[in-house]
Image 1 (spheres, rainbow, N blue to C red):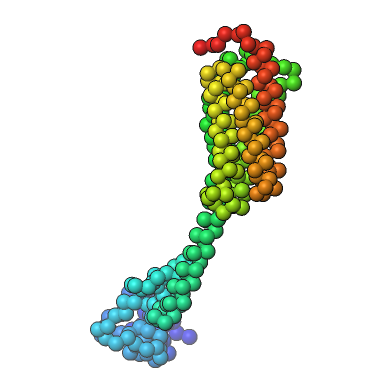
Image 2 (image 1 turned 60 degrees about the horizontal axis):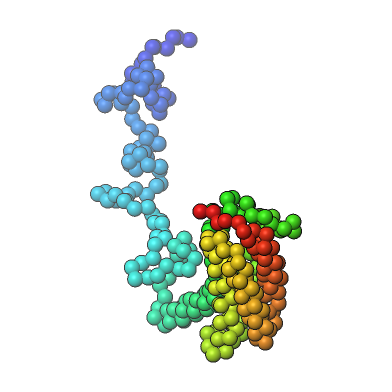
Length: 280
């Protein structure tokens, strides 16, 4: 068998379908290039695309995808759905006939929500009014507790100082909710609410005035008088509430019991420290 030449050109017929190895990655000269095979001819006719594929029209270039993405934003003059813009895909714009029931439904939902807010607002206001004023009054107490109140002689059954804040908070809250029940039962502020709510407002004002009288002015005697007036007015308010709403009257019982204890404590403190001078 005779040895094969190192690089014959042109190659034999049986080697024409593949490129000669001696040229590597370089293309053969145009004049000496072997005739293209069936695959090469197909690739040349389609511009390098797969045989049988549809060629794009010359001079045109696709700038948008074949299947454009749906916009998640509503069109101009079109409201977004209730669930948000993410649910807008696939929605169509409502006609004028379809928009009327939708607008009526939205208006009904808004009316119901406002009714709920208007129903809860008085309850929250009446309930939080006494604790809020009591919290403001406690700021005056904290300044006098470490100096003047601790130096007073108190009876052995006097509760510790940390008990007063949570007890007054619970009593103020229950009393405020009872006032809301009375206000709701009589139908708001009218002639029927003058006596029950007027007595309640009077005893609440006397209660708030005890803190500056006893701690700020250090008038233990006048503080006792204020507590006695508060107890009497609160008892009258409880009796008037019982005729309107029994639950509201029952909510005043812990308040009356605590007022009795506070009056007794104030009396003993005034009696045992009557001759003590006021501190500046």
